[in-house]
Length: 214
Length: 214
Image 1 (cartoon, helix red, strand yellow):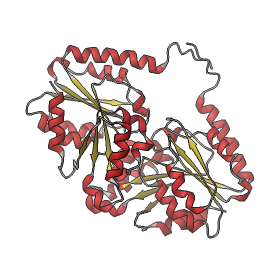
Image 2 (tube, chains in turn yellow, brown):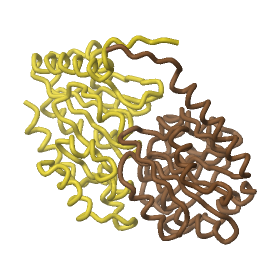
Image 3 (cartoon, each protein chain N blue to C red):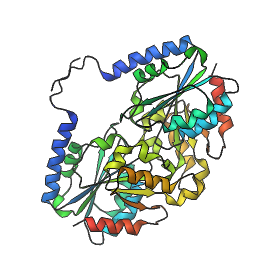
Image 4 (tube, rainbow over the protein chains, first blue to last red):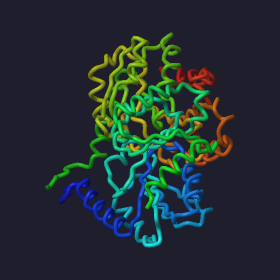
C-alpha cells in the first residue's frame, strides 16, 4: 500500500487553526481549549462556570469525545448551543473538526466558546485548534508528579485548574511540590485551586474568565 | 513532502507482537500490559503486587512514559530488572519498543513481566505488545461513565482493577452502574475492587495473578 502525504498533518492542522483564529477575531469571540485526563472534571467545571457566565455572556460549547455524547447531554440543561464531535477513537480534536463545528454555531451571536477536548494529556497538545486560551485541568487524585511527566501541556497552558482539592486530605498530594514543578515549567501560568463538585474556588476562576472575554 | 508508507503501522506492530509472543512462549513467561489514565494508580498497584509475587516468582518491569523515569524510580527499591521506555511524547508503547526492552532483560530468568503502558485510555488499545494479559485500571475518581466512553479498552481487558475505592464516600460514583456498563461490554471480564494506597482488595488480585503465572 502506498500513501502520498502531500503535506504534513501538523502543518495542515496549523493552517486551518490560523483560519479558525481569523474567524474568532472577526466575531470578537474568545475560544478556550480545555485539556485534561479522562475524569479530571472538565464537564463539572463547565457545569459550574456556564450559568455564571450566562448572566452577561453568550456561551457555546464544542464537546470532543472518542465516542458517546454523555458530556454534551450533561450540559443540555443550559439551553445553549452545543456541538458534539465524536473522534471515533482518535485521541484529540483537530482544527478541521472545530471548523466543522463552527458551521453548526451562530458565531456572530456568541461571546465565548468552550472546547472540551478528548480526555488525554498527550495527543491534544500537538493540535492547535485556533483557540485564544489553552487551559489544563488536573485533578489532585492524578498525583502531584504530572507536570514533570506531561511537560508539553503544562508548558503551553495559560491557566491550570487544580481540581478536586477537597480530596487532598484523603490522598498523597504535595501541593507545594506540584506548584513548584509547574512554575518551573511555566513561570507565568495562572493557577486556580478548585473543587467544582463542592463548588469551592469557582469564583476566582469565573472572574479571571470574565476578564478575558470581551 | 512525499512519504511512502510501505506497510501499515498497525500491521507492522502486529507482526512484531507475534514475534514477542513467540519469545514469551519460548521462555514460559507471562507478560501483562497495564493500561489506564494518568494517575489511576498503576505504579502503586505494582508497588503492592511485586513484593508478594517475589516470594515465589521472578518479576521484571517495562515502564512506558512519555518522559521521565519517575515510575521506574519508585520500583527500584525491589531490586528487580526494570527497563524504562521513554516514548518522547508518543501516547502509547508499541511492540518494537517492547522488543528492545526484552534485549535488556534476561528472559530465561523471569516468570512474569509487567508492562506499565503510557497513561492513556485510547492510544495503547490499538497496539498489541504481544502480552498474554491486558489489564485495565480505572480509579473511581475518574467517574463511573468511563466504560461507555472508552469501550475499546474495557472490551479488550481480561481484568479490570477498580482502584481508589476508598474515595467513593467522598465522590459521586455509581458502582452498580459502572459494573453493569462494564459487563455489558465485556461479560467475561474479571474485576477487582482495590485501594492500592490503603492496601485493601490486593490479596484477591494477587491470587488471580498467581493462578495465571506458570
